[in-house]
Length: 237
Image (cartoon, rainbow, N blue to C red; front, side, top):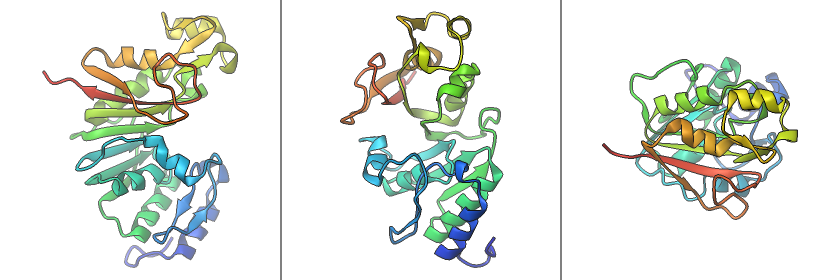
């Protein structure tokens, strides 16, 4: 690990990344000049990743990136005008590298903390919490969606942004229909689990829902597309 008293170099970051389990690097890593340091992740190219947050307005807002990994979307939020971004991930080794990347980019207002954000409640929430592709098959199968939604509510004072698959076919989940019906009663029908509708239900009527535009994303919470960008806004009062 480079000394905290000096700014790390790109080579320092490459060495730190090499020490991580490759499976723990979810997104590409770039240097300040745009050079790709690590071409890891799920294979999507950079323009498509940037479009993940569509026309989400981040200007002037504080943002909590829950399940941030190495901070791809935390840094993107900063570039999109966020005044402060806090990245949270349960893996301390990943966070150690994310902190070094932030120092490489010289972005003191992008910070990272190793934290079980599903259990920790912040003293002061951010304006917006974002969970990018955090809810997937395993979270669903383990019955953890309710806990994730509750955590998002804790970390956000005004807005919550999810990217997720809005509807899962039952044969695409590693759990029986009976188990799903017990975990998410009322949201398993037509041979599918309606994840986006469940998330909206858990947040309740105090939060309004909008599907943000993206050419390949769902335009409603019930559309069977691979991905949806869902923005929940807290209703005043």
